[in-house]
Figure 1 (cartoon, rainbow over the protein chains, first blue to last red):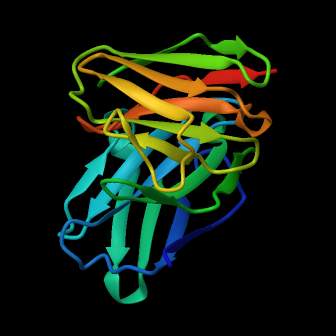
Figure 2 (figure 1 turned 30 degrees about the vertical axis):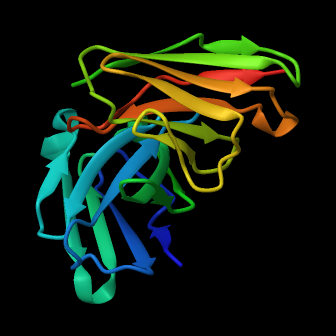
Length: 117
Length: 106
């Protein structure tokens, strides 16, 4: 059974750096072809892919946020970490980690993050 | 970046009626188009992948069609549990992008 769970702060101040951790089980990110990504959803708004990391450490970033995002993996711990710098109130959202496959996608439960002073 | 435009924004229907949701891409995404259902407080649930393939466990009343730039999700006979927000998403080009959503309401 594949599970993913996000962890991190629920409140950050403007200009601070957000660090979110996705801890997963049921698969290994050292397996060829697999990937884990981050998606966010501001309150009442649509979803947005932020970043994706592949088994071979290939990384993809949303171009409009690329300068602020870093995605890394720790295969031994079954974790993927997303950092986002210079947080702003518009970054307030629920952040999901996700494991996409060809015919399905596994989601974490999501973690709400509020950016406020 | 591929822009996905969903229409209508809101669809007001009754249980048992047919729902037709549209998703239009700003450029071709071949058939790399998926549909999700999302209910309040929940992560999205995959319904359709590769434009027309039902995901595991999805009822047959959900069907998808289209390729290139125009796609449709059809729910033939709305069940009360189907009232939710539906998103399309392309995975043809990075960044993967979502449409703005269609809310199916009673």
